[in-house]
Image 1 (cartoon, rainbow, N blue to C red):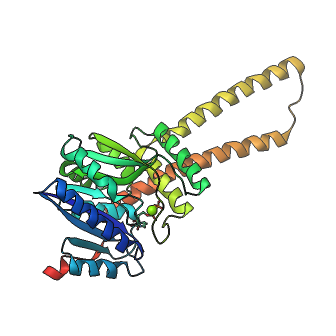
Image 2: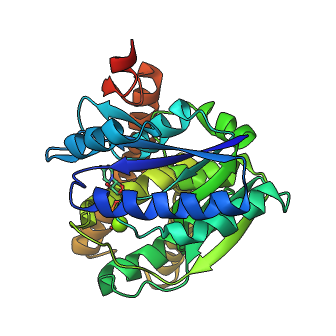
Image 3: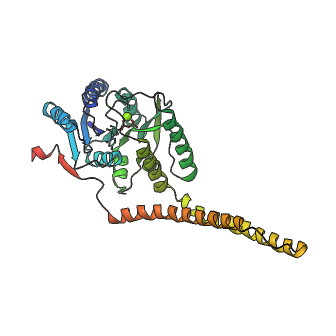
Length: 317
Ligand code: UDP
Ligand code: MG
């Protein structure tokens, strides 16, 4: 028998969950026709939802014991939810997918075939269009992927979704990366393994609304850059070198000018501008260092990545 754990992070998804459950059960049924010994568990992670999400999940659990859940004590974010899912999964394979049907369950048979029969460790999806998404959001998302791939050695694919199936080996590798500041897209790139990419057209969410504001996404992007690149740290060195060379040339210019023309050096306003410029660059560089320091500070506390308030196994004890 092989077991697939479907991991579903949910934050205020009470409208979407019934649709999702229906769709995944249908897909699971179809897949069982092809692979007779295939079983599923549906592991919902309630990320501190404030609506009836947990109630919905519990109702499903009542009628279907394949449904399991972990409910957080507060909202810890999607990254924490994914981690909780992977560390609680019992399957030989795990697939992480959104509750809003933007990760179409219909792709699952192809993804499973890749890991089961084609010898891949993982099959991941990427959307080739961003149709239906706000233009500004797409624009910044594209810039972000270009930037991070220039700066980081972890290979982060543009348009990649967190919709991915993986083998037990890979699950364990991810669970072993216990960093507090998590950026799963970078972690996948960093751990390696061979991945098959499956492409699809963007699908709009079925119900409810997106949980990601522009600033939440911005914070997520910063997490990615700081977590997977130290290039910003060496920036200060290059800035410093550049400013040094420029000012050295400036000094020579002024001395020569004085010796040849004997002009008094005037203009305190240009001096003020230069001082402000240099001070600005210095503050910026210290700020960048501060960002890394702050992350290091949080890492050293070794806080848990999530705290569970209840799980589906509580009732069984
Ligand atoms: N999500 C979560 N915790 C959060 C934010 C989102 O578990 O703090 C879940 C959400 O319920 C959904 C998935 O992450 O299943 C993706 O979120 P969403 O669809 O809002 O993001 P988008 O698809 O708009 O990028
Ligand atoms: Mg979505």
